Each structure stands twice: as C-alpha cells, then as structure tokens.
Length: 203
Length: 203
DNA sequence: CCATTAACCGACCACTTGGTCGGTAAAGTC
DNA sequence: GACTTTACCGACCAAGTGGTCGGTTAATGG
Picture (cartoon, rainbow over the protein chains, first blue to last red):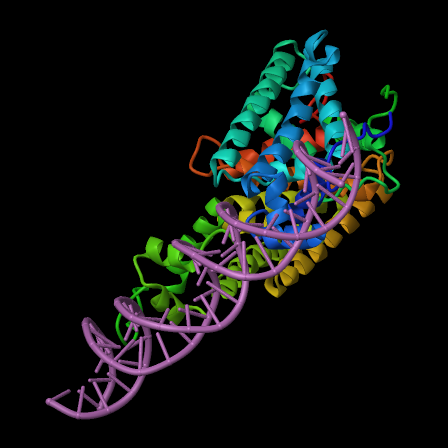
C-alpha cells in the first residue's frame, strides 16, 4: 500500500491542498481568505496553486461535497433504514456526530455557507435535502408514539440538529472527549433531557 | 414624544443605517459586503456613509455590542440571580431566546464572528464571559442535584446554548411561532428530553 | 540521453476594496 | 439674509483581489 510511483515532478496532493485551504477558510472565513494567503500557507506561488485547482470556488466545492457525502452516507446505513423510527433517528444523530468529529473542518465549513455563489447554493440545496430526511424521521417517531407530540415535529428536528451542528463551535478532537463519548452525552441530553433522571430509570 | 427637532439637514439616523447594514452582513457575510453595496442599499453615496460612521468596523462594533448588551442584561435580571440554580438557568435560557427573537439580526451577526479584527476579538471575549456565567450556572444546578451528573457540566452548558444559538439558523419572527412559544418548546425539549414523557409526569 | 509528464514560478491584468478630500445642498437659528 | 450645522456627492487613491500566461525545473520511462 505504498505510494504507486506517479510520473513527473512530485509535489502537493489535492488532499494536502484541501486540508490547508479548509483550515484557512474556517479561521478567516471563505471570502476573507485570499488565494495569495493560501499559496503562502502552502509554501508555493499562487500560479502553482492554479495548476492544481481551477479556482477558489473549486476548492470550496470539493470540501463541501466531502462533508455532504459523509452525512448522506449515514442516512443510507442499515441502522438508519430499518427498525423503529426512534432508533433510526438516534442512529442518524450518532452517525452525524461521528462524521462531524471525523471530518470536523469540512462539516464546519459546510455549516457556514450562506449561498453567495452557485457552489454555495448547490451545497445549501443538498443540506436542505438532508434536513428533509431528518424531519421525516422525527415525524415518524412522533406517529409511532416514541417522541413527544406537544412540540411541532419540525421544531423538534431543528432543535435536535441545531444541537448536533453547534458542536462545530467548540468540539475539538484530540482532547479528553472522544467522538463516541460526545455522541453518548448528546443523545442522553437530547433524548432524555438534562434534568436529573427520576430514580429507577434505565440508562 | 415626537422627533425633537434636530439642527441641520435631515437624513438617515444611525439606527436606520444599522438595520440595513446588519441585514446585508447577515445575507452576504461581513467580509463579502462592501461599503459600496451598503451605500447602494441605503440610496446614498459611499462618502455620505462615511459621514455617519468612521468605517466598516464601527458598524460591526455597534451591532455586536447591541446583541451582547441584550444578553448580559438577562444575566442581571432578578430571575437570573435569585432562587435555585435550575430556575436561574431556565430564566437565562428563556431570556436569551427572547433577546434572540427580539434582536435576531444582531444576535445572528454576533454568532458568526470569527475574530478577524480587534472589534471581532473584543466581541468574542464578551461572548466567552457570557458562556462562563452559563457554565457556572449549570455547575451549580448539578451540585444542587437538579441537573444530571452523568455528563460533564461544561458539555451540558455548551449543548444547551448550542441549541439556543442554533435558532438563528431557522427561526424567523412574524411566522406562526412566537418568541414565547419558541422558548417553551426549547425549554421542554432541552430540560425534559424529546422522548414521550412517561404517564403521570407533571408539565 | 532524451522525450514526456507534472509541479512550479514571476510578472502581469482588469477590477474591486476600504477610505479620503474638497466642495455643495438643505435645514435650523438669529 | 447671514451664519451655522448637518447631510450629502463625485472623483480619486493605494492596496489587494481572483485569475492568466509564458517559461523553467525536476522527476519517470524508454
């Protein structure tokens, strides 16, 4: 599984470009990050950067697709398509936290997109599709009687994934909190509430 | 209570400038919004804009302070300083939702700040101070036994206010959901969980 | 050694950016 | 009607923007 001996002069891979670019986008904001600065961070000239990539927009597009592909993959896993709706919902929540923790910079970037360009609007459209899947899952869980019906299901879905998405604001892998522990804490707090559970309640 | 007859030629008030500027910042992003575009939206020349305001940064500073002042005011209200910690926490959550609904554009802008300038860094510092107050409140509620102790209090606080802050992503006043109803739904979901409550549980 | 492939660079370009400056237009005060 | 105060404008500027172009350098394959 060593590098398969590419032709030509060796240099940066698309992946190493992406890592640096997405980090810069998240630190300074996409619009506020210039191609000159990206080049400087990579230790190469701006024109060399354009050899790898057609423009700033393409960097953004690839990064956003990476986050979105990860999230949609979760919705196609077995745990998300079979069994009671509440279980499928929990699976999607845990899976989303896992993707968020694994691909943190990419998901962070995705959640900051505002629709300023075609690339951003396409990403927003895919996000809305994901939200629709979640919303349907919550509605099914309400119908099956496992999720409270005194709050609008659409609102429940938004609060739940608002909580998940807000993790990008503070969670940093490598600290004491692993992705799994984070998912546990979130699922417990969101599904069972942050009040002290009454005695005799199973975990 | 009519306008108190100002001297000189009448024109835009600072408040009308702010409203338009913050709306533009939220739509396109602060960095991506040019002074030329602000001037166009206001029906003014760019140089006239500079008559009212010392620069783009000042517009941002005033807007961010407005959001922060509202949030800190909540933490000084009676309900946030007296009584059991769980009640004070709920008061701060409800108050934050109220401020968020009332000053939505300003709070939205605040939550997107990344620290790219002195103005932004100062706002971030005040936000951290607010987070500290919340974190202390959660810790007190855990000590008093009213909030679950099987999840790190700091994490609880972040999840809780992550949920509150995520409201800026979708809540729009003027729709069917009032600010109070929103606060009710959020408090219920966050404190008691989104699972169907067991029978015989008081609301 | 030589062709091919890929990575890279410096100089350049049209355009936009935040911000300045000297002057004008409209209101209130006396 | 003179004076002051405030609002406003067009023209301008240095610096930075995303992107282009023609050429060079370093690796592999034969």
